[in-house]
Image (cartoon, rainbow, N blue to C red; front, side, top):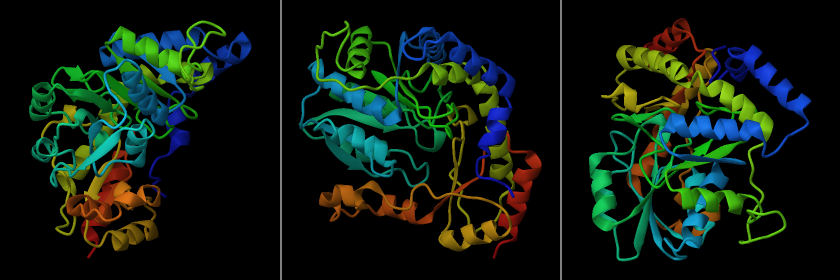
Length: 366
């Protein structure tokens, strides 16, 4: 069986250090808001290339807290429009609507599957105040065109970097390109915890402090509450584990790229479309998506031959019941991607032999 993601092997790769880190926290008697969090926040901020990182409970909270902090600081107001890719995961949209902001769903480029700059420019209205850029599948979605749109319109740029830890745009990391980067450390991410976790990275000291306060019940001083906040904190065990894995992130991403190179170079079945990757440094291959008109047949065929795959995502946000007010929308590119997308297994512990077996099976499929 070639697993889609073998988390047992992923954890075992750094198992001794992870076990030592967990034991250190357990034996310390300090489990929240301690030195492990402070150390990881410093190291993660340095890695991303910003001055501040604020740990929180999960990636969705990172998004919600960021937009809430921008509202509290007066830089956004409820009802403001936020441009966001239509083909993203539901969490990106939830982070916007949970704050009373208005998502503007913009179709992706059908080749890159990332937010289309031309369509984003066309979607701007007098009410648009921000853009949530999602580095989907681990590929950098930022471009000079996106940057120009934000500068010309004085938009706030927020990055959903949940799938792109370690990705580059030139000599800068994603998560450092806008006013804030929102990160998820769900176990399956490139930088994954042993449970839920998240963080916000920013170069804005005031924003960082507001996010930290909001995440601590709205309090920056014990029993004094500046905001109606929430409880969203990264626990010490997760911070310690993440700090271990952070040291190996670039190396692990290179292992993902090696697997991706095999898929890119050797899959030849004309029934399969692979988004091109001209710049390997701009993709950390959290996922390896392919498109196929007979997606479900291909998935079953691979499963029958011992290869696990997943679909990201079978139903687009605008067709979900929780956003039934958008059910009338027709977004053909997004809907086509969600109908045809299939994610192949990829991870830092996947072997090249396993990758070539996946290639062999795909090329033999008719």
